[in-house]
Image: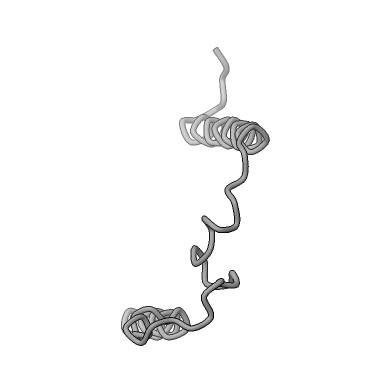
Length: 85
């Protein structure tokens, strides 16, 4: 139907069309659905204030600390970057 010049250009415009369609569907679904209550969202993300201030001792383990895990990932990425220069 349309001459886009090359297969890469056709793939690019297909990706643009898919992005626009996805954005329209996302906005439409957002306006139609009802938000979840705050009680269901507690503890879902690290930055959200939790109702329970004191967590049990068995929950305070090293692999549940986002700052430690993030630092470990950054150190691993840096080590791999240096190794494969």
